[in-house]
Every structure is written in C-alpha cells, then in structure tokens.
Image 1 (cartoon, rainbow, N blue to C red):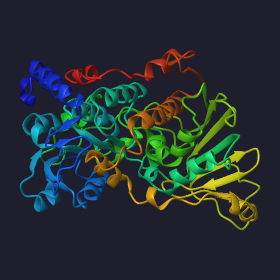
Image 2 (image 1 turned 120 degrees about the horizontal axis):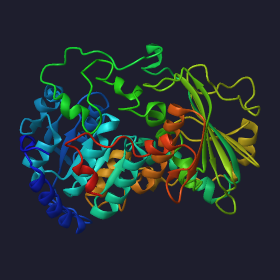
Image 3 (image 1 turned 180 degrees about the horizontal axis):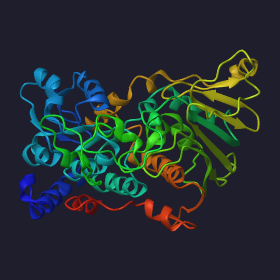
Length: 459
C-alpha cells in the first residue's frame, strides 16, 4: 500500500497491531465495552453516503445517542446532505485516509457500500477497534465471510449485519415456535424473490461495458477496491454493480438475508452438503441469470431437525409451486417463503413479517398453543440494538458475524451455482467444493487487486 494513501505498509501494520491490542480489551475511543458514559454520544463514521448507505446512515443518526464525526464516499459530494447538518464532520473519498486521520475520534462505523468493498472497510475498522454496522450481504465471497467471522472474535468488537428484520418480531416468533415445538421436522422450504432486478433488461451481455465519463470528483480506484478495476460505466455505479459477478451477489445477496435468516439460524442449518442449479434462465458469463432455481441440501441435525431442502426461486416468471393448503382466494407474495413440515405448513414474506400457518382454518386451531411475543424483546429495532450494544446497554447484537457469516456463505455457494450451473458437492469440514475445481476456486475468488492484499492478513 503506497504512501499516497496516507499510510504506508509498515505504518498500516503497526497501527493495526496497536489497535488490535486495544480492541482485545474492548476499549473504544471514550468507551469501555460494557459501560456507558453519562450523556455521552457515539461518534460515528458514515462510509457510503448515497442510496442504501444514506438510508442506514440517517437511521443511525436519528438516534439521540449518536454524532457524526466523519463522512466517506468515493464521490465526496454525495456526503453534502450530511455535511450540511454535521458541519464539523470531515469528508473523505478514501476510508484508509479517514481511519489514518480520524481513527482516535471514531467509536463505530456505519457501512453501506457495494458488496465487493465490504470486506476491506470492515476488516480495517475492526482491526482498529471500531464496532461496525455492515449492510448485507456480509461480504463478496465465501472466504471473506470466514475471515470476518474470525476477526469478530479476534478483535472483540460489536458487529451487526444489516438484515434489519432479524431484530423484528419474525426472529422472536420463529425462535419461540421452534422452542415450543410448533415448528419441527421441516423437510422443505420454498423461498422466492420474483421482482424484477436491475440487470434483467440487459440481455445477453458479451463483455464489460465501455468507458463513460465519471461523476465529478469520483475516486474510482477506491470504488473498485480489491476487485478488478474496469473503466467507469453507469452499469456499475450507482447501484448497478449488484448484477455483476465481480462486484455483487445478485438476488441472493440482496434478498436472501431478509428471507432465510431465521430459518437458517433456528433450524441449525449450517452449510449444505450439495447445491444444485435446477434451472437457469439467461445464464451469462458476466452477470447473474435473469432467473434461477437453486436447491440446497442439508443433512439431518438431530431430533426435530431432519434432512431438508431449500429451493430458491428468483426471476419474474420463475415462481415456486403454489401451496395446495393456501386455497384460491389468497395471494402468494412476490418475495417470501413457504415452510413444509410433517405436521404444519407455514407461509411468510420477508424482513420482519411474521409467519402464518396455512390454511387459515389450521392457524385458528393451533392459535391457543402459540406463545405470546415478549414485549421486552421487541422494543429495539436493528440499529438501536447495535448502538446500544456498543454502549453496553444491550448484551449482544442480534445479527453478529458469527451468525451472519454461515448464513451468507450459504448464499455465496448459491451464487457459484448460478454462475456455473450443475451440481456442487460441498465438504463443510474442509470448506471445499469436491467435484468442480473452478467452483472451488470461486470460494476464494481471484484474490485482491495489487495494493489491497494487507486487509486479508488482518483476520
């Protein structure tokens, strides 16, 4: 890493090591983990100031316990709205420069950047003792998820992946229904995302798009981060990066964490032993298909957790089988899931929406057996849970990397199946795909671009 980034390689490693020692003791600037200073505020760095990044930043800054001290975006003018309110906040176009100059003034980071840049920003923040709220998906590759999970434990900071429904009633309901035996012996889940995506109209893409004029002041090198750097084009930024294999994670990265989070966690799924591309619509060498049916096979996990299959359907015209229990009068949502157990069938949408037993007559029969949601557990939304965990008021984050990493790794396996097709046999113990060398290499990806290697040594 060159000195023009504000931190040469030697100082980068030195500062990270020093900060790691502090993080090991859970010490934040102005905070000791587990304690709260009266009337003090958390000093936040906002990294990614447009689109979804702006939305989660506003969410965090609405909290009376927060203050904005740093703003970072590859197009600095995208931070203007925040700068107009937080006039003392410094603006950067490179997160490395921000940490180099502001590291001792930042308590926590709110990160809402493209998928392929999640890893280096988050890894550097954690190594410097900063807690992080990171928008989903956790990272861009299976390997990056594994490193972030290790780093969370190593540095002892609070981490929250931004699948906001995991602090809602759906998580609590699902956990209670599993613990009380309402949900048991699940054999199959049909999950679906049937809305149109940005890349669907692009057709059969034959290569990367040509150079276009960049927005004024854009730091394109930092935008590309550890991934391959192609000439700027609006089919990458803003927002269109999600459809490209080299930058995004398609519909899995976008909607998977909002649809299957509680299923994965409370049915103790871990990682599948096989992933199948049962259907690909418009397969392409550069962008995700316009539709796919991907099956995940999970082994039995003990009594009440038999072997089961998750079938994922994405694409406007690639819908799952309509459950016969639903009846003709009720619509299937465009995004959601149907859960088939030996005794009951459940249907739900995404994010914080709760499940219903279908048909409705069966829901009414079972209603007296259903546990009531505890008000004490539903009083914190996802951002509030994160901020109060950092302050020591909540004992833990609801979607820490230890939970979010294996969930996201499942989706990363699905992304590889969307890209290559076929059946992938996965060895969870060795974390290897056994029957396809190219697929196995995609667990790690091509490796970081020159100048971005150091982040992968911090876990």
